[in-house]
Image 1 (cartoon, rainbow, N blue to C red):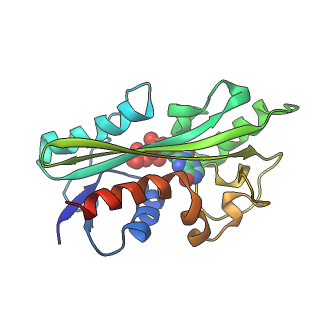
Image 2 (cartoon, protein in one colour):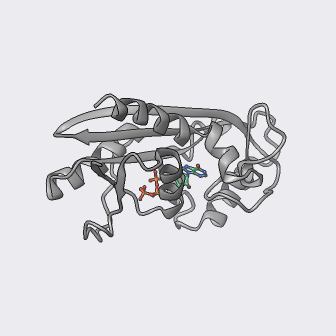
Length: 191
Ligand code: ITT
């Protein structure tokens, strides 16, 4: 089994991806490889940030690794919070960040939004990208307590419940991360 580092400090992402990847690959966490750094994310696109995180690990540890950069894009907010999703309110507190989106959306008719996920993987020094998007809308108020981040205020298209009201399995069938990871797994299976 080949070891693959998942360069994330977000344990919810790790759990989601672990469930999707199964036991074909031995996922290693940053802690397991002794990387306790706050990996810089200074890009202006998901792609740049994902790439930056993967290169950080490859350059220092010389290990096959992948990372995801993801976030919520709200049309009425000109694509915000976008790459700033993790700390939109200035803090990394999910409640504060989702409340800021709800506040900014007060009275807005167009509530369309999407979650995006870009994965960068560096395998034997070569980088590849995989993407996933899930369309939906921002709800009027928060509901549900599963998942993480903006899940309580995001209702995917075709569903009457928010991501935070879905089981992990349900979210993992349709989410942006699930789509990108399934492309990653397909690619890895061919290696
Ligand atoms: P790492 O960089 O360590 O992987 P992070 O949480 O900082 O962890 P990102 O920079 O990719 O990750 O920021 C993604 C943010 O977007 C995340 O913190 C959430 O606020 C939001 N987000 C991404 N995917 C989400 C999902 O499936 N459900 C809810 N919110 C999500």
